[in-house]
Image 1 (tube, rainbow, N blue to C red):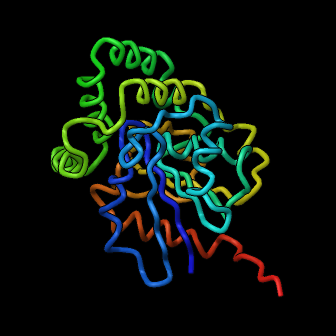
Image 2 (cartoon, rainbow, N blue to C red):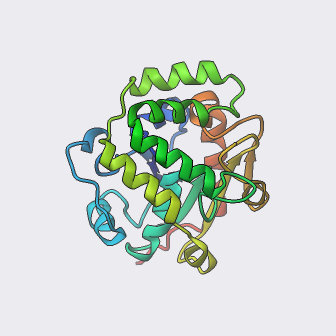
Length: 240
């Protein structure tokens, strides 16, 4: 039995993973917990430091599982490798060592987005939903699917979303991924507009004809690619 823990990205809660449910084969146990402040945990205050986040997620991120972090979720799970017992492996989807890059989303572009969010948080969140879907085969269809899952309002508060934007600006996994405590694998959509070309070249697998949100447009392909990486991950040792 392979256990997968699926973590969502900025502005989006765990419901984003629901389309993958029909595509897990026997032997795969997939769980998709929410980050504090999102979805089923919207009533909680989002931790402002990594040690506090690790404490809040300790029971959701067991060491006998493979963690799968998407976008900001990939950066956060990578950062938590320094604060929690290492998992069997970490698979990062749609994420590199950092969010901003000169060949992807430039720091100035993120800064502009953050200023817009300060003025109009809800409208900016809605803009982001469309922005991240630009590389998908059918962005309009993907947007309708996303709204059917999440609704038209974020489950997280503006304060939680602002904290996430700060994390996108500041998190850098160069140290953690340079000497990782567990296997690290990266999946990137071929047409992901939020990931730079350098990060795409460093990816272990490329999802052809997909953008940043393959779970909406090709959940079958994403599930298949995640499973494809699992045999490459050393099995747990059995202690007799």
